[in-house]
Length: 154
Image 1 (cartoon, rainbow, N blue to C red):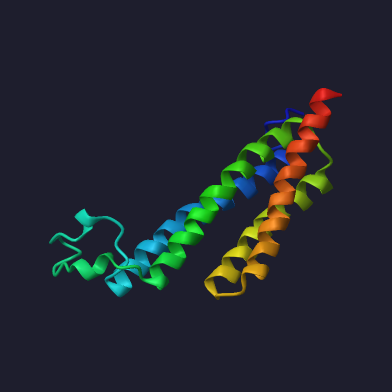
Image 2 (tube, rainbow, N blue to C red):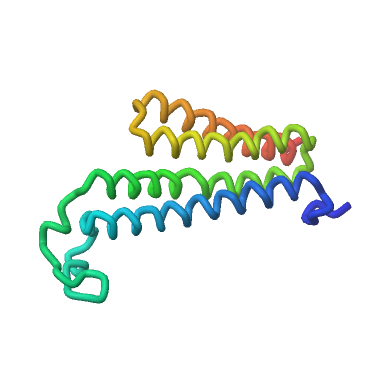
């Protein structure tokens, strides 16, 4: 069975996990846009305060930090700092043909930690709570990378 085929359950696990993470990254961007539109604030660049179809009454105050908007922006930045490493490590992990149970535990576990991190951030949990989910997800990615190195070197 070819490793990069949906007939390979490890690759299928990766495809599902990676696609969910694409939706997470893109959805977080849309959440930020929604929050900016809802509050008519939290714009990021000076040129955003110009009259347009969606901003009929621009005001320099729209550039001030709005925590409701900025929280979503910070969650998006956090995704962009963490999810790409999963995409790469997960793909390489598929290439070393790990056990299905291990791939599912790690990949679906990573998806679960990103969802938990999102919920913790969105509901203003303490840094320790968010850091717990970040740490678990980070350790998953690190394990996959080390596993790939171990197999490749051996």
